[in-house]
Amino acid sequence: MTDYAVHEHEEFLTAADEALADPSLQSALSMLADTLGQRNKDAFAELSDSGLLRDRARAIKDATLAELDRHLETLEASVNRRGGQVHYAADGADACQTIAGIIRAAGGRHVVKSKSMTTEEIHLNRALEAEGFHVVETDFGEYILQVAGQRPSHLVAPAVHLRIPQVAKILGDDAGEQLPEDAEKLAAYARRTLRKEFARADVGISGANFAVAETGTVVLVTNEGNGRLTTSMPRVHIALLGMEKVIPQLADLPVFLKVLARAATGQKLSIYTSMITGRRQPGELDGPDEFHLVVLDNGRSRILGGPLRESLFCIRCGACLNACPIYRNIGGHAYGGVYAGPIGAVLTPLYSGLTHHPHLPHASSLCGACQAACPVKIAIPEMLVQLREQLHREPSQANRVENAIYRLWAAMLRRPRLYRLATWLATRTIGRWPGGWIRHLPGLGGWTGARDFPAPAPESFRDWWHREGQA
Image (cartoon, rainbow, N blue to C red; front, top):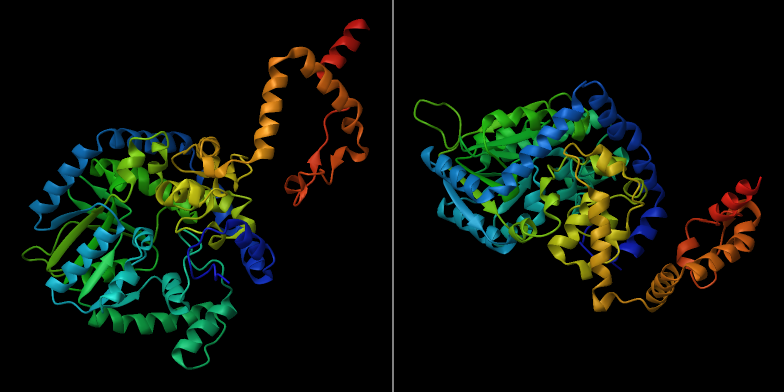
């Protein structure tokens, strides 16, 4: 039996059923809308020009991707000018090998990491541990999950699926002592433990929320301070950058800082915004001796040239997860891939293959809450519909019943008399169903397995118009 909290999978329906039957998970998820979700709404409501700001962020993303090759070249030149090195990785395996090679060349053994979904995407910890390196996550949520052997279930709150008593048991079992079920005391325990790891680390690995092309600056947005320790205490800093995270100039950064913090946690700004420009320079007291920037493609250049290019606008804030009625009921592990929620239902099929995840494009009510919450207004519902359309062209996904219904529907739409007859029959039969809702559709139980089906209106618009016109 698959442990969905531990392993990536392609069993969305089974995992979703399991999530819905898990009272502990349901208790944890029930607070999401009132915490992160509400803070997102309140933060943008307090900003009078939030619509214009989001439009500006979207425009910058769109323009940057249109000339991404040029901006990457500028970024590389800027990093080199500050004494850093840029490495390009075609895929996850390439990136892992590159990073392992940098650590070996530096004589490193102990590695500390700040939170990075891009490193999760390439399974960096597993690759480095297989090479014999000691890797420790330093974000509190990621540290809990590393001790538990679990995967993140949310983009910015990776351990949101766990309650405090569960965290106390996980960390207590690892420590060999009973720890109090108190959030502040558990955080203090983690802080004491992680300080020792920072002190002995040779290498610090971070992701990058943004990379400024004109200056070669890597920007980290955090709330715990571990990002600064990770990038400044070890003698080697390696930053892994998804290639779509480049922004052209420093003047663009405030736009994204304002929308990212509000969308992610409801803050005006995050507690820490770290801007790292290369290795330590002569006369500077802090910073690493070496700085390496690994730029990851891993399918992004393929997506850039396709119809779902807009998915690369994502700044990984998690706002769409907090707003989504599907995510708020099943959590992140059910989605199967690294990225969960509405944007995960788009990204996972794009990165891992649509036929491996055929249910994800359907894991949405298309209510539009995700697009409304998105700080760069990504048209997630529209992209999910496009993925559904692509599924119909996959021979392995052919569904005889569904195809027969579509053919019948198309034939009816081409014949007005037949359409009028069908709607007349529907209004006089199931349209007059008691209560107006159908609880079970014979042969189509999947439609009514988890929700009622609305019956057609008891009178068609054509009949109403004819009746009113006669009056």
